Structure formats: C-alpha cells, structure tokens
Image (tube, rainbow, N blue to C red; front, side, top):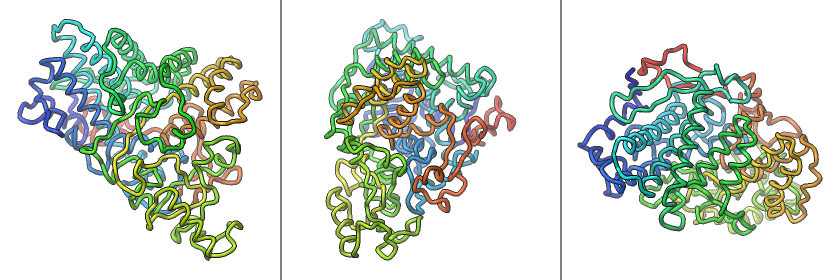
Length: 549
C-alpha cells in the first residue's frame, strides 16, 4: 500500500528521487546528479553514496529535502544517547536546540517533537537511498566489478545501520521484551514512487532484516575494492570493518553473544588502539588510529551552532557550552584509578564560576571547595583552566567538567569530525559477550589490551567471576565511551534505570532534571521507547493511532 511518509518524513524525498528538475543529494559543491542519471554508472552511484555520507552530518534540510535547521542529524543523534541516559550532565539551564528538553525526557516522549520526527525522517531517508542503490544494481545489468560490490556493500550496511537505529529507538529492547510480538517499525523496500511499505513489523522481523543486510554487505565487501582515498575523508566510506562492527552491535543487543564476540574481533582488525596522547587529544578527527568509521566534516558543510561539539564539548565557542558546561557523573569520575590516564580528561576540582549554575553554588561567594581559600586563588584556577584548554572569556567552569571531547581549534566554531565506531568499543563488545557466555578467560583477554593501554597498573585477573567482570565492563564502557552516545542503548540492554540521587549523587540538579532525575528501568517504563511521529501516523495508511508507542 502507498506509504506517503508525509510532512518531514519520507514523502519529501519524492522531490529528490523522482524529479529531474532538481539536484540529487549532492547539493554542495556543484557535483550534483539528477535522479534520472543516479544509476547510469558506477561513478554516479558513488555520488549518491557521497550524498548519504554528507547527509549523516548536514543540517537535516540541506542534503535530504525537508527537515529542520534545528537538527544537524548525527551531530545531534550521536550525543543524544548520553544526554538521555544522564551521562552527559547539564550544569545550568540552557535549552538551545531543545537540548535541555531532550535531557528532561520532554522530546522523545512527545509524538510531535522535532526529536521524534527528525530521527525517523533521517533514518528512513538513508533506507530509501540504500534501496535506490540495492534495487538499481539488481536491475541494472551492470557487469559485476569490485567497485560495484563496494557500493553495494555500503548500501546494505547503511540500510542495516538505519534499521538498527530505528528499532532500538522506536521499538522495545530486544532483551527486555518479546521480540516475536513487540511492534518494531515499518519495512520499506521500494526506491521509487509509490514507496510501497509494509505495516509496522515486529522487532524480530526487523532484526532478521538487519542480520540479512549485514551478511549481504560483508559478502559484497569481500569482493569489493576497499576504501578509496586516504586520511580522515577515507573513513567516511563504509567498509567491511564497519559492517562487522554493526553486526557486533546488532548481535550484542539481541544476546547473540558468540556472533557479537567474533564480529567485534573482525571489526577492529587493522585499527590499533590509541595511546595516551591521542586519547587525550579530543576525539575530533578520523585520523586517529582506532577510528573505524566517522564523518569527515568538510568546511563547506559545517553546521556551526548545530554541531556535536556545540552540544557536548566544553571547548566549543557557543552559548550552549559557555553558559552550560557539561559535566560527568562524579560517581564515575571518582572511581577512575589514579594510574588511568583517562582521569585527566575530567576536572573534579574545577571552580564553579557560573553564578547561574543549577546547583546554586556558582561564584566565589558560594564556593565550597577547600582548595580555594581566597577569591584570588579561585579566580587564578579559572584562568589557568581557560588558558590550558583554549576557552574564551565567556566560558564558565564547573566541578567535574570534562575535556574528553575537544575542538581541534578550541574557542572557535570550526568543524570537527564525528566519530561513530572505534576499536575500544569492539574490545568492550567482545568482553561483554564472552562474559555473558561465562568465558572468564576470554573476557579477560578481550579487556586486557584496552585496560593495560589506559591504566599503567591494570590487572584484569582480579575480575574473575561473571558478575565482577560484568560490573567492570560496565564501568569501562561508561568511562571509555563517555560522551559518545552509547548510554541509551546500553541502559536498555542492561535494563538499568536512571538514578542521579543514588550513591552520593551524580552531581545533576534535581530542579533542572525534573522527571528525568530518576527514571525506572526500561522493562517497566515504556517512556524509553520513542514516540512515532504523529505526522507519520496521520499520513501512513498502514499505521493508526493504535500503533503509537
């Protein structure tokens, strides 16, 4: 049946997919391609892929028609996972781009919010363009070549990536529900009007489709040409490592521990762990050795005050950060061993310079840190932090503020890369999977390289039971991947709620966090599931109000 995907959802792609009047996907620079020519050659198919690559980080209306300037796609979706999970903690009241509203759980729980609508819109745009390539290659009659297989592998990987994102946000978690009956999202296989889709499929059906797409992607990549180019731009291209990495995430989220472990090993092949210098450099470039996949944000497509670093990095020169420095959970930071260099990325003793801080302790008059006995010492400490990290005069400081994510040019609004997949994550996936298989030695072996690189006194052998290993793996994920957006899906997989008050408190303000200060675990609280956009329900004849989460 015709799926209209009206409004800011898929129907808007009718303009770019089926019209020869306008450019197709690549709008900046002018190497655009019309829909009529999109499948005419391998070179043109690559242009389609290049458009999808840029669509990952562009403002949502720039590459894919429609959307809204208030979201720059993965610049927003990536840190959103830690914003929702209470990992990326706000220290003051600032709501640029609805970032505070999202933190307070007043975005994804509302079916008319931009967050609910645009995440759906963006992921289905990716699926539609993946379908265009997959279907077009199947019907093209082109001779199979390595270059064609490389494009096909990327298309299948993109479709799997988008469906995994959709089902993990708009469906109940696989491990905490009944996937064979829980509603997932609609499947879409068409690549041209009338965009026939299915009704809402079960979580299991969507997971099966993801698995099939990833297997097809890996098979295509095995006969592909490999990534082209070099440097940061090359890692914008998906490759066989990315497909294995997504398969590891997919398998972990469904409890297929053996597949998760073996896929994680395959994903990290050829991408060695970063050393201390690189880890502390700010995670702002794809050129870091362990980056498997990331968006290389070109200057012509910079999103300025819509970027990941605007929302999450304390060195960005934007009001969201200057007025509201982001802090880490003090329970996590206080648990970092002194021998672990990752602790250097967090400043528990930073003075609270913000007189509008949510905890009411901003400014010298409210100082509670005994390190600062005079106002001069207090002000000197603020000045030293600003000088070391390149902050401008308007930047506030706050206890437990982080400098894990840092602009390459601090104190500016210059664009930086957005990293999606790292080797460290793959070590942690393998470790968790082997721990869940009760393979104690295997889990320790997976953790050892990561732990010994980060902590000069690391001894994995002290974690010698399944429970102690899992507790340690959770700690390592929260520390190593902090700020990179994994908190939301981790908490769903582990069936953990949010409690900023427990164990001495996280440092978050209950007045600021409101209903998100304490949230029941996902298995008993359906608010973890994103609302389907009301515009989609209104327009899609295969959905009704009864399909709303």
